[in-house]
Image (cartoon, one colour):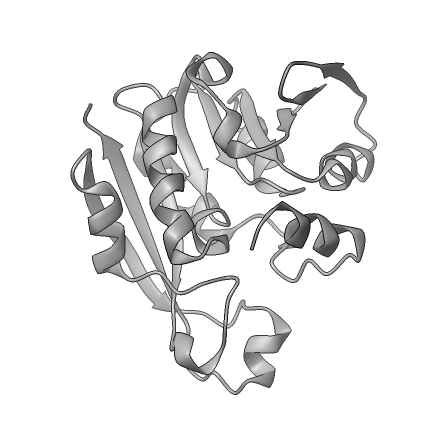
Length: 219
């Protein structure tokens, strides 16, 4: 599951993970993180998520990274937002009113792109990746965000033997294994959800649980 998989999904508009509304956990629990409005928020593997626009409306500068150029341009154009594109060494950098989005590979990001970040919102990145890639994702994320960054993470838990991801099932034990050595880990909420791609319903999955975490980077 590499770059061509995701680029093809965007080309074919097969984006069942995209939510047409702001994520309800973000709207309900964001204030609990206590992030000052002037601190930037990073949204990894952001697609054309409306969560970025909501975060901007709360006063935050927003930084995203996304592999698909089609997704990035759709984010701005669907809202009729003026933007410009700047070519860099590894990224095509899109700058608009509500967000700055780096179009390219997440693993090429450095601390230089994430200066001023105080928080991360991950609703679709960790669950998009298979287990082996989740290890590299978590390690790189914690390398490039500043100390004391707070991460609002939303995962899914379901019987993965009945349906292959993405979005993948990620257990609390795995979140602990990925992050607890360098972050404090707190479970904010765990509730069943029906907000899943249509193929979950077609597969007869009768229990899908969303778990919401706050991770605080210690070092």
